[in-house]
Image (cartoon, rainbow over all chains, first blue to last red):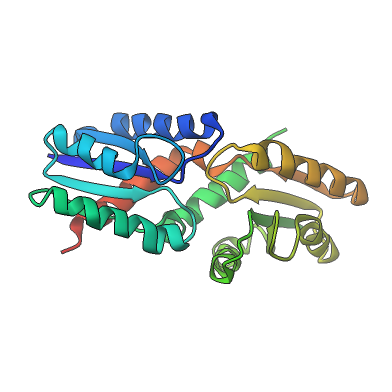
Length: 125
Length: 125
């Protein structure tokens, strides 16, 4: 069973964390057939942590977990911190395949998203 | 003449700022017909600032500038700081129409981007 774990930085502003949780719920609505398990997790400040998010996916029977870093740039968090945490957690779940997706800014779809956002704004009265 | 001004937070890590500048260049390649002017700007730390970015667009003859906040969440920077800075700059350029686009996390395309990123990762050997 496939799981997605959406990882954000975590904010002291509760509304930002709730936005991430709501995004994970919308993701589940959009791709629940392909990914029956979708959870949110946070690098810092907010809960659940990344290890707790992985534990949550595994306890629901995930055999594969894709960690989706909700970060725009390939900074230290994306390049070093998240991989280290995921690698440590992988040792606790040797039977679960855990992979980390690219950061969002690298995607060609980001281009489409930005242009669509600009065009929508341009059309506003 | 239409301009896009991509605004990121700005980082002490130069590579992150360069990624934003490169993204602005790619945006220009993708939508140069529609937006002959595409610039990058930064809220803090890096240069050019938002007012300098607006000045740069205006000096190239922009009659319309769409400010694209390259932020995932609707935090204080997106809700308060960027609008305040843009509003102040608007007074210096009364003949230029300046609009601010929504933050990226609000877009339905973000869903597609996340799912595409997950699926690409899932296919990796």
